[in-house]
Image (cartoon, rainbow, N blue to C red):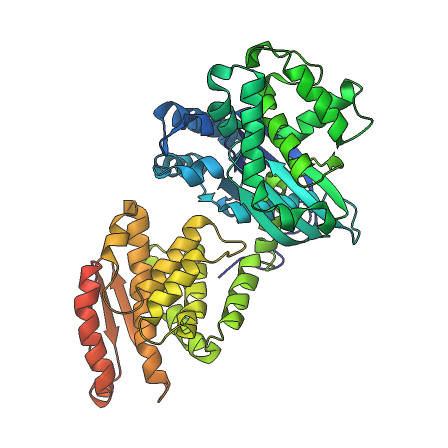
Length: 501
């Protein structure tokens, strides 16, 4: 049900949008010999994070973001939705009202907006950076200072080994430590000290003893390198001495808007001071002597990850396989559940307007639905849901992970209607349909441990589902009949009238 492996020939066009806390970035790339070649790159300073107050995005910030995406959308008109991926980072992770932005944003772009967790952001950053570096065996530390968070990755070649995301960024620190955009030694010291404290939690795992070279990614670190190079403070890359000289020069200004430095763009003027404070703290606490920078970043990583998804090299499959192995899930039983999910999905997808991505979710939910057995048979569905909701799942967006947990939690017993009611209407309806499918598939797995489930008919409309079994079969299988009777009441709570004969 996914695209075929030959669906990404040379010349294919893909697009990625990075919805950052400071800026939005669009990259459109052509795929050539397994590598991406940018054909269009756009960036706009949106400062979504600056509009975040008490965990809520303000109307002005939301509108700035949507206006930017409306302009980006003109470049994407000719691309199929499967060839475009938009990812939201820290500002959207923190926003309790993120749907007020993501829903209209999805309508504008014609494709889903995925809000990703910090460690998934770190993985994608590393993927983007690794493709710009020499393919050697040296261990490297990659750092990305964003508007709301900073990512740290230690890896070799294309494989990240350690991933971390900390709640510090040049936009959030600018607002918190430099009120009114006023520059002073006290304000700067406050930002530096906050960054040291935040980084102290990871210093022993990311110290210079554990890597051979340091690479900086992001507009802030690239801007710092540009400034120190153009002003003659470094021959290339960023050093401690160059950072100290830049810090001294920045403290000679009294306000963000008055900063005048060669190599500093207008878009970076209001974030460069907190950015330098964070970078200086990282150099000191992680014992960094020299950092080179890379133009590869999150958006390039999203393109390479999308290439894998469209070529059947989806990291989410590896993640699910690892979960199944880690918790010794019964793969034979999972295969039975998946087979019944496929039957029900194929029969209902037209009536219920389900998409390929819905099958992907069902497929992963079926594969992992018994991992909670590793904790306890009693309430195993709740244990599965807990693991899926709280584990680091490389490749999965925040919404995908939450939906997987919802399908596991609701596969048996009372449906989690209260969680479904919290979803927006279209998403709530979609998840109710998927819950119906996996609940029935799990019911049928108990039949197939004893006898083969016969072919049965399935008919569906928006509010009903009818199952037709061979004459006399249900009477010969009273346990299944009893379970279907129970499901009639449960599925009624999901808005689906179940009938069978």
